[in-house]
Amino acid sequence: MYKKLFLLLLLFPFWVHAQEVLEDKVYEGNIKSVQLYRKGQGIGAQMNAPVIPLGSAGLVLEFDDLAYEPDRYSAALIHCNADWTLSGLKPADYIKQYNEFNVNNYEYSINTRIPYIHFIFNVPLVTKSGNYLLKVYRNRNKDEVILTKRFMVYDSQVKVGGALMPPSQTADRRTGQQVDIKVNYAGRELVDPARTVKVVVRQNQRWDNIKTGSKPTFIRDDRSVLEYQFFNGDNVFDAGNEFRFVDLRYVRTTGRNLASVSMEDDVVYAETALASPRAHVGYLEYLDLNGQYIIENMERGNPKLESEYILVTFNAQMDDIEGEPYIFGSLSNWGKADGAKMSFDAQKGMYQSDVLLKQGWYDFLLAIKKGEEWDTLPVEGSHYQTENEYDVLVYYRDFGSRYDELLGYISVNANKKRF
Image (cartoon, rainbow, N blue to C red):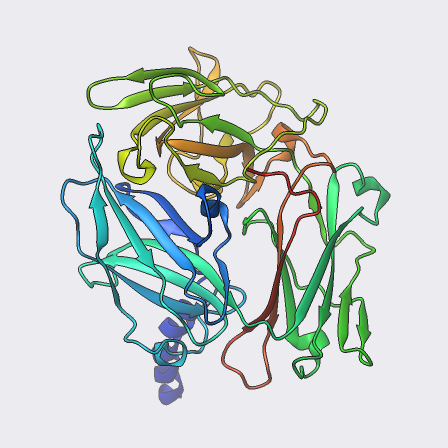
């Protein structure tokens, strides 16, 4: 009995750690403007999802440290299962080099009121597909974590097709969007695919409202095809509304959706125009970034080094809305970052929050937190015409395997209208 108890005590801490869900997170207030994206042409590449094919060295991490002198930072890669818990792989299983990399490519900001150091890190090649967490830490001490970011690497062994369809449930047709999926696995032998294949669908690079766990509605063994055509509303997303935005590309003039900009000796201040609920307002089509942001400066040469940091006060009026609003988008790590929650100012009769942002263009919504979830519908409404982008990720766990392979990926957008 004592031997069994001793073994449980030894194994229990590891079991707890193994079950931890690893997330995108910034751990220190001086670390700002964290972006991990697939390399591409033009400034729009900053909006690319961090999803790359196996064998590609196409991911770049960028962030600012609000400091006068650079710290010594390192990075490591962590392989995860489809549910973002630790996989059973060791670093030697998925990376050829020693799994610690110096983050030593940096430059100082130029003539900015708030000084910062801009870091760039090119993510190294991996040898296995699946989910990964990029972990950046100080002084080679893995307990001094400054940020973590998720990314995915897929091995194109199955063909994935996806289509946005009107929801099968009549009640959802004016407010929802449904993603139907086909997986052709003729190029890879899959054992019991109805049980071993896991399909994950996410909207606009969000993780809080993913659809997962659905079983295929049709299995066509003769053609090696899995079909996911939903008739019960299981795969219907709230279409939401086009994202609100604030234009911070200028500091010498007032950008769109700003009420004021003030340049002081030590900092730039800005206030947004007053945002109000629009759940009962008709749909208005316009270009947005699907909740992302881009660093851009329309007044000076190098936006990465010459852009000012601006202390932005977000203003919102929430008449007849129950609950406190959150700034919801990539700029606030989808409601989880400090400053995302807005507080009520009784004298002004509005909700406000102060967020330090680098010059650029920022998308956001207003959401109400309910438990551990965020609900945008009471404030923003939902319209089937809204342009959204969906990622379809197809995972496979072979019998006896220590990890989930990512065998297929597709991005679905039937009405792409973004910058």
